Length: 433
Ligand SMILES: NC(=O)c1ccc[n+]([C@@H]2O[C@H](COP(=O)([O-])OP(=O)(O)OC[C@H]3O[C@@H](n4cnc5c(N)ncnc54)[C@H](OP(=O)(O)O)[C@@H]3O)[C@@H](O)[C@H]2O)c1
Image (cartoon, rainbow, N blue to C red; front, side):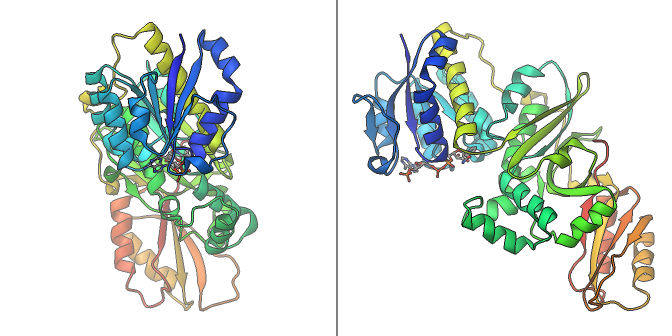
């Protein structure tokens, strides 16, 4: 007997999933020992979709409730997105005794543990591999591959659009605005790029991964988040002088006091493997107390890489339906440990890159150094590239390790200075990769 699948959502991920299920059906059957059969597909404009050839008896509908009612469907694929109708669908499917595969990071980051508890109560499965880092099987790594380890740090590049923009600024020395509009023209960035460039998409993904990795109940609101809009080509020139590059780094690290979580542009050494992650690729670096460092790299999005994650989840869930798994445990289960409460970002300590844009005049460095010294921040270096425009001179001060608290206090004190053209930009300089 095969396992019946209903797909709700036929956009990027839904179409990639359907293509793989149809084109790769023989391989999938060989690997499982039984077939995965698509019994229904659903989208608002299902009639206008360019679908692969499907048997005539496959239900095509605009009404997701019809998919739910289909008696021969065992697993529902939710690839609609958002926290409204998608949540309604998932909850109704579980109540109807159907397992669910979802790619929905937004929903799972906010309500993952609760939905998992509901799945458990209903005796069904809820799989979500595709929700973070599309083609990288990072959930499986955390749940199975390195489950025996205790994660102490997790660092990632989790948003392809912002990584593409940053690497293009780095390569071509063009402004953020011009690269963004080009990316929008080419379809690499959404018409409304807020979630990507302000770091919110990466924040949902980090919330989910950190909850799984550290066993703490986390939500996106626990994560300090800063986007990439303020990064200038000159920041890359200065970063290169320091043998560093700039990436939108997602980080979650365990300290004796709690968990430090952030999504923010950061300097990382050019020698670090993470600095070679360019374009729309994603990567995740996991540090374990016993197994030490492991690194995972691949496509973070796209119909086919994400489709692979959905289909692989379907296969796992189908095996379970077929062969049973009486002791199913939520991936969020160790949240009960509650060992690592989130800390405010001000507790973070690091060397910092401080970039100032000033109207040049004598005494600026001395004034800045005085304020930094007052806050017990030691200077490491002052970098100044030759500049033609003395009315807008960008230069950089790097510091010895200092707390984010002191850096913020110092920058706040400096922010009134009449030589500043805009408020200073502070980025941590990450070490230890
Ligand atoms: N894109 C990626 O590479 C990627 C990667 C990882 C995870 N994800 C996640 O995967 C999910 C889907 O993303 P996507 O990029 O595939 O989105 P998308 O291209 O916008 O597709 C959404 C689909 O849902 C359908 N839909 C919306 N409302 C519906 C409703 N009320 N009833 C039935 N169908 C409805 C749409 O129908 P119409 O087409 O008829 O409008 C569309 O086919 C999201 O949670 C996203 O975060 C995406």
